[in-house]
Length: 323
Ligand SMILES: [Zn+2]
Image (cartoon, rainbow, N blue to C red; front, side, top):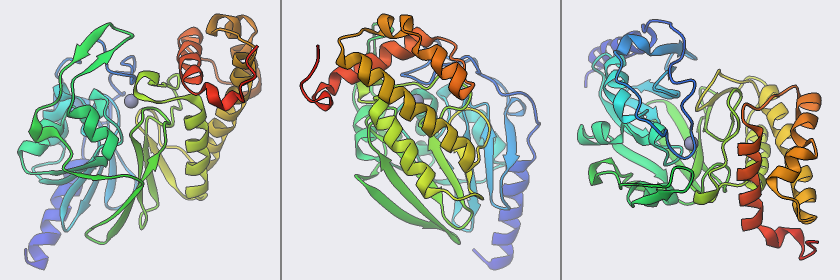
């Protein structure tokens, strides 16, 4: 591609990404873990939102979550592909620019639903290696008592990593890193080093109740550690993009880290004394969270149930002292 062509292409891509209508986010009630229990209705591209974070990075919202789009001389790179029902809308929002690279932050259908479309058009899909296993295998969803089929092969990540991956897209250096058992067992962050933009998937949840997909290995200890790692990775100028909700500052992420560390300590203490999720609720754990962190959960029992399930899967952390 000649320099002038590339410049024109870049301008077209950015105009497309940044030129979307600004309307409220869709799917605010769709859950992230483990899958939306009902398929999202198809909506036109105009229903998506766009927020330009830098001259080359935009956040496409309402797909139903956030999709991060980087425009570079190597084409478009996406972090997550939205739901299957909204994949064409995401594609339309790119104004014809080709998606060369797609990185999945984890396996959930609202992050991997567009993989088939973009994979079929030639995008190379990257993920942490366990996420690849989940999209390539049928799995059970205990909360809904149902099975989900594996995605077709064209939708599978073909480039995987265990701990870290580095890549370059145009002038942008990109780092992907594993977040151990933070939401599922295969989460990663995507850090755009030169633009100082950090995509964290469902590991941060500023508006919705934090989701712990315990059946897929997510648990509160993993989430507390992952939030602490992400805060260390960021600085005061970092723009942090969660899967759902607004772009965050490091201070806002640190507040979520503190809340999760508190919840980890309290729920571990109670589980150590043989308390169930219901007992934790009755002990007022979530009221303490509202008071200390000014955060009210929509379904506190559901959250504590998932916390409890995950803690019992890690009972060896209690030191064998359960009474
Ligand atoms: Zn998720």
